[in-house]
Image (cartoon, rainbow over all chains, first blue to last red):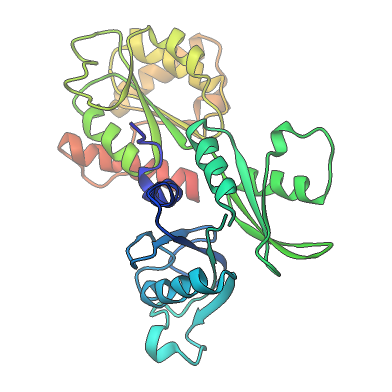
Length: 111
Length: 225
């Protein structure tokens, strides 16, 4: 039994299991935060090719958009860096209610 | 991320090997760094040391652009001495908060798998068990037995370790007696002051689960503030 990472939902272990089942997988990681960001840097989300995901990069405010953008990297094969915050033009759509600002890297698992 | 790196990192986590995932932000190139196993010293190993020590990810300016360094430390550890009622909710809450939990109690009827499913149980005497577990700076120790025969050896071992949190259940009166015994045993005031006693934040907790919440909250406060 692997109880060690119960607090982070075993994000990487899930990603590896999905790959082993022949699914395509992308990862999202919080790389920088400013202000009162909901999750610290290093927080991760693993996204399966059907859009299901485990983990979190915010309090749920931006996961929807991050999942969409992560799935796009499965096609492009290239990592992207996304920025979210109240000052962002997208704030009305997928801003952070807490007023913080974060940068998130989305990338496909390749090879 | 390369699938080989993902597989290796999953293996490192299972083996409880500290690792840093370093990703170059300009092109997403990634590699794993194990600063503990490296003899040579360069900017990446030095920075990896730092993110593991602080347990905080960071963006670092490298010679070829910015790198994101994400530390993967082995889990925090919680050692509970005394497989009493409070230990049952405390062990589960510790697991939920991300700790590897070990419960020590030589009384096998207390420390039974029935009462503590999926918890690492040790039936050795606390001094032997503590020596084997070797608490480090990412370990919290809580004694719950009320019995000096069991609590005191565990507290003495904890005080000789760099454990980040040491808590002891018992009233103010019990704690005063405990402090006197530790002084008798040669411990200095400054060392004894590391012990949180009575254990837990003062939130009026009554039931075992509520007391476990107050203890877990105090451990979290000590870790994060």
